[in-house]
Length: 369
Image 1 (cartoon, one colour):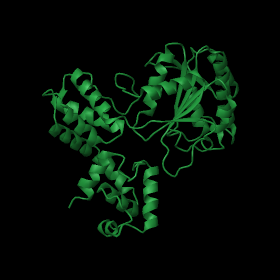
Image 2 (cartoon, one colour):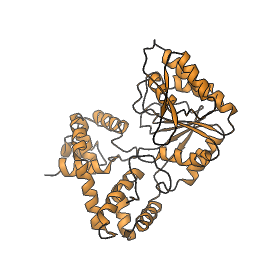
Image 3 (tube, one colour):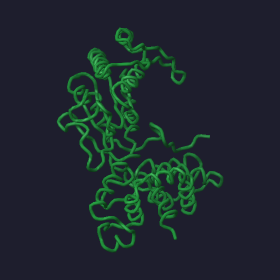
Image 4 (cartoon, helix red, strand yellow):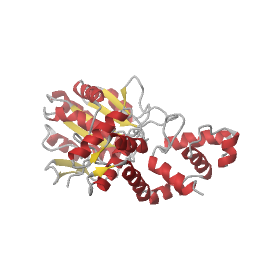
């Protein structure tokens, strides 16, 4: 059975919807060997948008390397991930393998069962300080030279660049240097910059494209169509209720749509009561993770989070301070900033829980009498 909604993975059409103008902009940057930073809050499908934009180019021989920086620990880790994206079917890949071998990095050819691609992986070796950065620079320059003679674009996509990687991200660190030194690669980056955080890259070095939440009615129409095409009917009001409960972020909406579809499949219908029950299911499923997250927050951040989840907008008011035992004004401001940087609060004003299921867990498990 095919489920019409996918979560927690990079998707393409028909599981991807909308973003025509944004896809055109990303595709133009790829074709023109540009430098583009795709920004937006989490769960807005930034990586999926990059993949969707690349598909027409793939059919014309373009090459794609995608590296996720989220758990990268430094240049050597990024080097491993980058080299693992190179197929031995690509032009000059044998020369790259020779270059890596000569550097003592011991590359190996690994057969991928998933798509029968041949990739290179770099085994961990002991390197002197700065050596990993030098090798990473050499590989990026090699890819740039390869891109200069390849008839279609070579796209280097770096995901989640908002996460600091020692020795790599920052205004004056290696990433900026590499983007300034290369001429033929298409650099496409994604990130979710938090309020108060330093810019990942100088504005003069990279253009920015903001992915805003998909329009409500556009999302409603798409979810209804996906449900109908997979044998489940839903009226407009029920799907609007679904979209409103899940909040503005695409990933949360799709997660609730998936849960509602699975609940509604036996009777081939989704209504507002079922949407409410599906939402409660997701809150219960996430409860263990929410408990761990809550326990890891300092008391002053918990107090602020409780007030925000309860719908308080004037956090600095005397009434809010007494009702929710809030800390002093400066600590409230600090808590909001930190919770935003961690991705727990939206960047909008007034602040709201970025995860609607976590917000509901706080209301039902923490604020309930």
